[in-house]
Image (cartoon, rainbow, N blue to C red; front, side, top):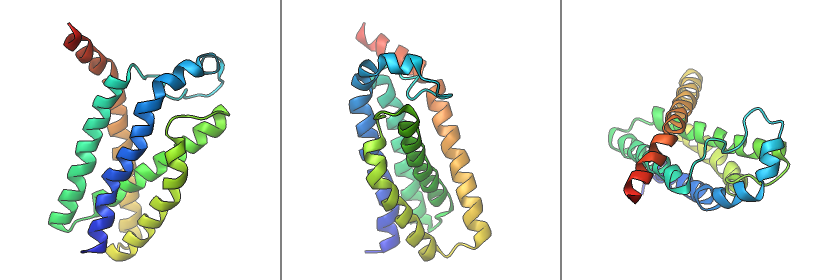
Length: 173
């Protein structure tokens, strides 16, 4: 089996394990830290736009489709530029979870998987960059492109969180 292709397929697996932690724990976490979330001085309050586990899960499913189609595309066409960049963006996302937890001074959903996955993802990025043989410019452009795309995907999904919640509400009636 091709080692690079194995690494490429680890992205959706690592993503889902990380997001399972968020899906499962965020509602209980918001209840437990309700007072702290209201009084925090953080610029961006963790999970402030969270409506329900069900509506959050719709966003996760959309991301999962994207993060599963990407490795398929990369492996079929032997083009890893976008995969590498998004995996870099996801790895940066893990850093953000750690930062949020330190700022909040409490557990934040996602940090328990971020801590062990962060060094693993960094290692996977390192060895895959060597296997892909990007030039320095390609590597930087891939990381910038992927991070911007990751931010756009997350912003889009957060923007439609209320719509997802409305969809779930309609299904209940």
